[in-house]
Image 1 (cartoon, rainbow, N blue to C red):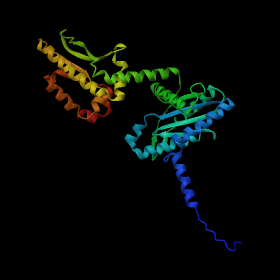
Image 2: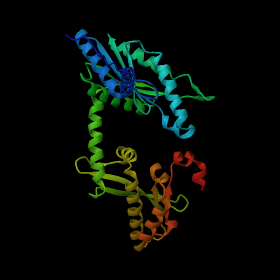
Image 3: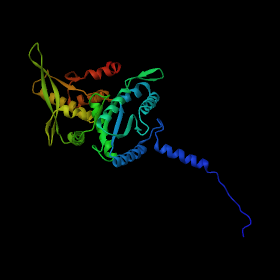
Image 4: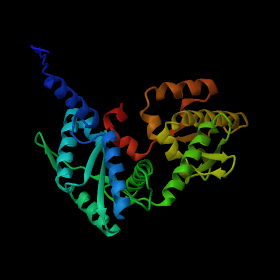
Amino acid sequence: NAIQYIGVFTDISNIKETEHKLEYLAHHDPLTDLPNRLLCNARMEHELQTAKRHEHLVAVMFLDLDMFKNINDSLGHALGDKLLQKVTARLSGHLREEDTIARLGGDEFVLIIGTLSSREDVEHFAGNVIELFLNPFVINEHEIFIGASIGISMFPADGDDVESLLRNADAAMYKAKEKGRNNYQFYTAELTNNAYERLSMETYLRHALENNELVLHYQPQYSLATGQMIAVEALIRWQHPEQGLIYPDRFISLAEETGLIVPIGEWVIETACSQLVKWQQTGCTQLRMAVNLSARQFWKPGLAMIVKDILIKTGLEASRLDLELTESIIMRDTKITED
């Protein structure tokens, strides 16, 4: 029989504590201490399962702060981080204990509101969230006014899984941005159709230059004093392979957002200059060519050199080219504009 026992004990409390901290960090945003995307998805999945059993509605709200980039650019990222923490505190104080608020990254938040009985409940809740942004956030003696654009998708009408509900709420949020910001919009099937149309158009637009689908039309400008034509303005059009002739109001904003406006803009300047040189060779020596510049073109470094190279390549005198700017470009930074 055993007459002695030897016991070995190891204190693993520090290991357990470290594991707990790592587990927490894996599921929470370090800046705001909110659930991150991983935990947000898990909680939403749980909320959907509960709603399916009890036949409740669930609202998924995708919230994006309006013009937050301007705060970071003007006041610095440190203050921007403090603003995110203030926004978190204000939103969290408005939620019920069973609701969830998560930060997906940047200035994007998701609110999961469950146990709802009607759409009117959601409208009331969303309206209250918008009102939370009426008062300024005070940080380091700065009064910061900022709004929020909210997109809302509903379970089960707008999707029955996490991915589709988040995607549709995101689409509705962009609709809120288009409606003037600082408002909320519900998801509609039309938004999905518009998103597919936009994706298709973006794909085609990326190949429009290489496929020679862009064309310029020229609008004459006359002198009121003499009645003579003194200039022409280059107007871009897109000869879409399926939709026919498309006017710029349908694709220029897309070109701006994707950055395609830069190569397209260079093509417009060069094509217009080449055309004017051809007209000069036929005797129209006094004409000038007017070309509109986009904001993205104007603020991209090296514009002057690009225009200079085009003038040299086409042989057009600089005095014959008018580059037209919008008021918003001029007022963005008057010092740089004057220089």
